Length: 268
Ligand code: NAI
Image (cartoon, rainbow, N blue to C red; front, side, top):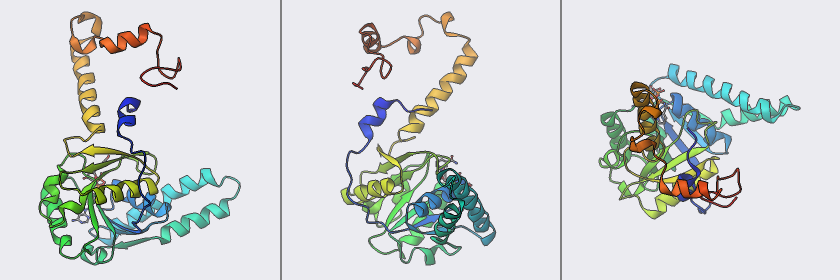
């Protein structure tokens, strides 16, 4: 779903300090974790990717390689040798490990992308909290769990936030940066700067269910299903959800149709 520009504009941070995160540990090498590791390495970060066994990690590496080859095929149409060099250099930036405690000993950021289970996520963070350096920021890629609740088992609630990517990570530009009530300004700024450094458009979200995109998307999809159940809108002239808002009517009557006419909520 394309996000309404109104929402995005309100949330996009205009400035963020330079990125200070140089090494990221991605825990979980599935669909999301592989993509996160790829975009980080592609943008010059040193990455350690962790999963439960070498077979999974080998599959993750294969997925990343295939995806990288797709990226460079477009970028280096006339010079495939340079493209192949870039693939190899990027892959070299990604180390894989099955021991998460070993992985977090020297890292600036941990991005967790394991399965969506709060007990498992809390167990993981509680264990690595004892081992990771003090400055290390912890982040979860959870779609539906509370970041604050996950962070509650650690002693670094101020250095904990959410980094919610979208699938497929190498393609989707948006990154939701979630701050809890305890996330410090410094941590938030560092997460924003890192998100931008790995090529994403970052928006700030509160730690509320669904953050921004899923909060809009889920009711949108549910409404589509309800619409199918109900039949079409002409049969329901009194349904408040279908009535145009006063503001929308005013803008349309003034010919302010958005990009099409050069002005809508904004001037283009
Ligand atoms: P997935 O099932 O593809 O990958 C999860 C990986 O975590 C698996 O490879 C599994 O072996 C590994 N794992 C499980 N426990 C582990 C542990 N203790 N230590 C290390 N690795 C462990 O799941 P997917 O789709 O990548 O989702 C991961 C997270 O990202 C979830 O929290 C999900 O809600 C979130 N997310 C998923 C999106 C999607 O479209 N699939 C979009 C945005 C967020």
